[in-house]
Each structure stands twice: as C-alpha cells, then as structure tokens.
Length: 257
Ligand code: NAD
Image (cartoon, rainbow, N blue to C red; front, side, top):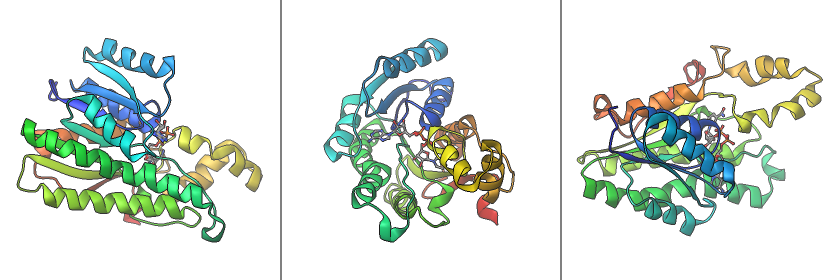
C-alpha cells in the first residue's frame, strides 16, 4: 500500500490501459479519479467496483479532453492530484494526403494537448503537496514511426517531448515526469482495427493478431494492461524518485530492433 493517501487522476480510464492503470494504482493504495467523455451508469459503476475491491476512494468525472477548458476542469474538480496519468487517446489510419483535418485536430487535442492542460493545472497542486508524479502513456509509436498514422505518431512523439521538458522543469523538485511507451496491448482501440484488417488481407482474426499486429513485437505476445499499470506504480514509487524526463518501453523488444 505504498501509495496510500495519494490521489491519482487518470484520463481516459473507463476502458483499456487507463482502467488497468487505475486498478493497479488503487491496488497500491491510491485514491483514484476516473475519466472519459461519457456519463453512463456503467462509468460510475466502474469507480464503485474499484472502491469496493481495493478499499480506496474512487470516483468518475466526465470531461471531454478534446476541449482545453474541460481538461483543465477535470484536474480542478478532482480537488487533489498527487499522481497524474495522461492516458486518453484515439487513433485514425489514413495516408497523409487523405488524412481528414478534423481527425488530425481531434487526435492532437486528445492525445497531446490535453496532457499539456492537465499538467499545467496539476503542477501547482503537486508543488503545494510537496510531491508529485506525472506518467504519460505514449507508445512505441512515440519512438518509431509507421505509415498511415501521421497524427497519432506526431502526437505520441510530442508527448515524449513534453514528458522530457516537464521532467527538466521539475528536476530540482520532488516531482517526476516520465512517459511509458507500450507496444501492442489488446484493448478496444486495437480490437477495433482487427475485423477490417482481416477482411483486407483475407485472414482470420487470429492470423491478423499474430502476423500483422504482432509483426513488429519480437515477444510475439501482447503486453497487458496490468503490466503497463505495474510500470506506472513503479514510476510512482520511491525507487523511481531519480527517474525523470525519460521513457520506459513495455513493448516486448519492439524498440530494440
Ligand atoms: P481505449 O480505446 O480502450 O482507451 C482510450 C480511452 O480514452 C477510453 O477510456 C476513452 O473513453 C478515452 N477517450 C477517448 N476520447 C476521449 C475524450 N475526448 N475525452 C476523454 N477521454 C477520451 O484504448 P487503449 O488502447 O487503452 O488506449 C489508451 C492509451 O494507450 C492511448 O493513449 C493509446 O494511444 C495508448 N496506447 C495503446 C496501445 C495499445 O496497443 N492498445 C499501445 C500504445 C499506446
């Protein structure tokens, strides 16, 4: 229970990696604030389930992170923010010359700019508390590129740069800022791409997972949300106090190639 008494705000945490990170932080004793842009009963039910399972405080705050004022209001409404995990993200795949401008703008706003806004509000709160951890969920695509994902790759390279900059700006304070760069994790974001790819290449969905998605991941296994969450808990631990302004890959060897 190393994070007992700390409050963690995790953006985009009603599914996938964000939810996995929230659960691992709660398992380590942190109170958690969950978020997405919806306001459904099931969003609040997820928070109640985490509170009951781990004996922490958990609540859900709706905020559409494509909007600067809502990103800022999320952290303000949380009231405390010792740990900030910028995780919300969307994806769109198209060649640069056919990439819809509104998709570019949405990806940059949600995957990158929202982290700037939440960080700007969270830092003074961390300074007041005398301790803080910022963990940005970037991607192997924040360190490497691949075709047809221009906005996603630009945003993920951007969040790696933001993490380094904030790490330097807070280097003399008891605050750290780092990026986790996962390889492929089987979440709704990835699962949504499987049926179309299977049709396109006339493959089964299992073949798409092994031969297309995991092609660049030497372990040939998906990383899990628990593994990404465990890495976030480590970055919040005392052992990681001197780790700042850097990236940690959870990618089965992808970026070693
Ligand atoms: P996901 O679709 O399960 O999760 C995305 C989360 O972002 C959801 O909670 C969604 O509601 C939220 N979100 C989307 N638009 C939002 C908005 N406007 N306002 C607030 N929240 C919004 O997908 P995931 O795979 O869990 O992705 C989480 C993060 O991990 C993303 O930043 C993604 O780029 C990154 N990532 C994923 C993988 C992977 O293989 N799944 C690999 C590397 C990095």
